[in-house]
Image 1 (tube, rainbow, N blue to C red):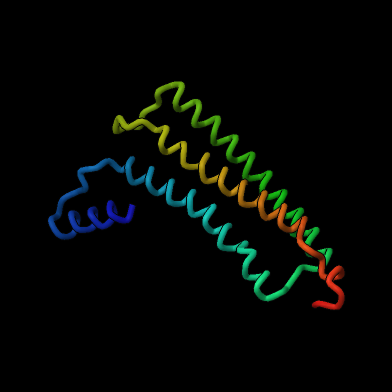
Image 2: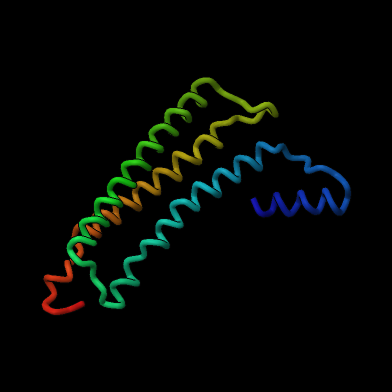
Length: 142
């Protein structure tokens, strides 16, 4: 996507020409970048090694709340992935194309992958929160 944007800027401002590619390609690449960044952001946000290295463990109530929040979030992302999958299926079944004649299924596949990855990451976080050792079980540790 970055290469397409750079090419567009060079052609537009350097040579006063428009990008020969369709805007559909840019839209598709942008959707993929956003959806894959969704899962990546969740992975970086919930890195368990940082907490393990510092020795910090959540208190029982923090562990339970974290587990519930992660599980509900995983459920929401799963529902979004299912809705996106239905849209993808419709796009494939009808051979849907954009105004420029490009097939639209690659664009509709991005939310399925992004929301699915986010759901998997959050399921992992919920499991990790559920099985983490509560602070009260560690004998005086903070």
